[in-house]
Image (cartoon, rainbow, N blue to C red; front, top):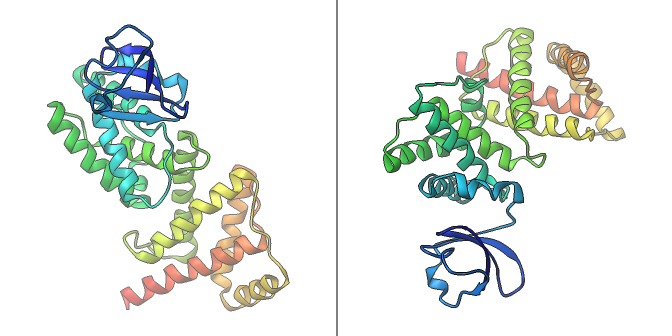
Length: 281
């Protein structure tokens, strides 16, 4: 392996045997004159491929212990979530956590928007973030507020997202919260946000928002048209609620729900209402 650029004494840029660029961590690995051939690969503690160049400066500015703690959180997320995460998650987390630690030492506590929604819409990511924050505080002997759980979770969610930016993550959570409120008002119920059907409903809304942001709504065929008419006639209150959702999305975000999108909304809203009625009964 060719090590060709020093970041600091323990971090450097390198090329593997296939010519792929990577970041390598290891005690003293950046100390020697550059470039050089690293023959003892046991000196390498961690490697990172596909790193955006904008994050290289972080390797000089962020303490190694913070960076490694961020990587532990990212590793846990990769192991426990059934999806591919953005390769730069570790770097985004390290940057955020380093800043959070600095704020904490200065006595600054930042409130995180949509905290309740993130906890309930993304319970797996929230649990990983909670575990990661507690482990980071223990390892680094720092005291960060629990609001950081949501911030860490949002970075993980963003790394899952094909769009891959924090704005999309926040917007998705905001839209789901808004649509849930429309359902509660239109159907005159209080949603059980711990239920499996609500979790499925939220998952559907996550993909709906992604489709709308990409301009790729579902389009119904003739068979779906027939089913849409049947469901609309069978569940008029649910259909009226879906019409409120469609009007809201169009007026607020400029999104238009196709008949197929409306059909799936009818099915999911009916399901959460039936479950709620069964629980209350």
